[in-house]
Amino acid sequence: MTEISVNVDRIENVINVFGSFDENLKLIEAELGVRLTDRDSEIHISGEAENVLWAEKTVNGLITLASKGEVINATNVRYVIQLVKTGQEDRIAEFAGDVICITAKGKPVKAKTLGQKKYMDAIQKNTVTLGVGPAGTGKTYLAVAAAVSAFRAKQVNRIILTRPAVEAGERLGFLPGDLQSKVDPYLRPLYDALFEMLGPDTYANYLERGNIEVAPLAYMRGRTLDDSFIILDEAQNTSREQMKMFLTRLGFGSKIVITGDITQIDLPADKTSGLKEAMRVLDGVEDVAVCRLSAQDVVRHVLVQRIIDAYEKYGSGGEKPAAKGGRKK
Image (tube, rainbow, N blue to C red):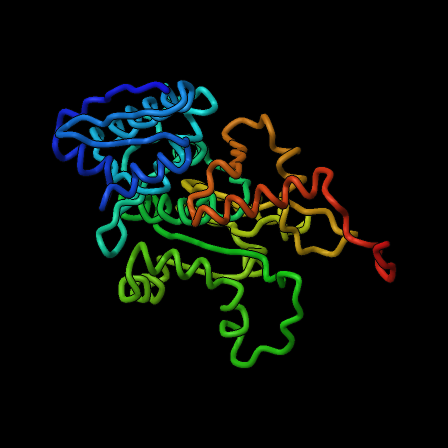
């Protein structure tokens, strides 16, 4: 049994690191199998030697984040533990980055992982950025935040959000209403992100004035888009022809962000994903960045990360489903 103490000198950092009702300390205990107690401005850690060392590095990492103004929550704690266990504790301060955008409710939007920080840096530095990764890694949300930030700073005159109208493994059948009503269900995730960043009223005003456009990918054909921040979402469901068409819409003073998850392709089996091909074709092209986010960058509910990991393990050698028409023995 080993026991050490970690000093937390500022009372606001103590409150932040501990969390409401010491919830952050309890999470560290559960994840690392140690015992943590707080006495005055010190955290006492006891347990097996290796676990105590990990816990000490985790607490110090959280103190570093708190001193940089980060709000410590369960997501931060789990991610810092991940970095510590993989020997990357010296990089913890890196993702305490600048605010990308302030939402309509005053919430600051920041990169929460090293992968997200790299993704945001790539968007800032490059004209075309491909953000590829599993659900919950913030690909679309952060891209919309970057677009709103650029628009507010008058770096662009328009925000254009688009995605292919491909059903996610379902047949939705006839949708009533005019053309916009028919494509709205496919574009809902983009609306949701914009509503959060701008608020419904501001969004409606910009939409009416033409500063914001949310449209299916088919609407992009034949256009040249100048002074615009263009986001192509769910790009794994584009064909190679659609992807080439989209990329060649780029005009002067514009920026393109393409997001997608190559593990969730809803195209027919005989069609090549335009995103997968673009990742190969554009790799190494000047002013184009390909950012690969992973399960470590998932910032949704912790269960989302576990589900992604489970599917990856299953796909890499787990039990395979029975053949169509066949039966498991």
